[in-house]
Length: 143
Image 1: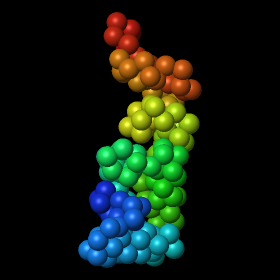
Image 2 (image 1 turned 180 degrees about the horizontal axis):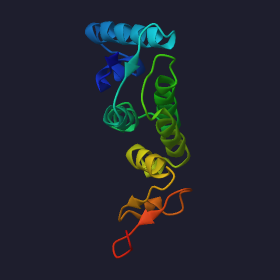
Image 3 (image 1 turned 90 degrees about the horizontal axis):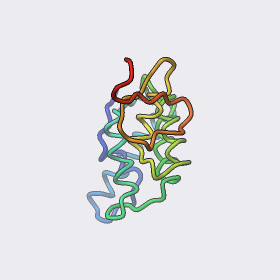
């Protein structure tokens, strides 16, 4: 199993501008191709996915529209060799983020996890109000 850092995903997604970065891009792209064929198993963390989502959409970095960034991340999660215990939640978060870009990927990921049966979300953030399947806990309510 190979754990991916954000820079590996970014090298595969963002057009390189120098020779060293081009070499890294080729290596990263080939690793993802191999994972797509099921030749290697890869994984990463939610934190890495969130970092990549931020960099891909940040105006000072790649400045990609949310639907394109979400599509790139979904393409990784859907690879044959990608392993993660919460693939469904991640894909749900990417879908939610695509439909509500102002929510942000981290909050979309939080919402996707909080939509699990029996889960309540403790937050002061009203951005979660109106999202399907969210039971928001507020101070003063019974546990």
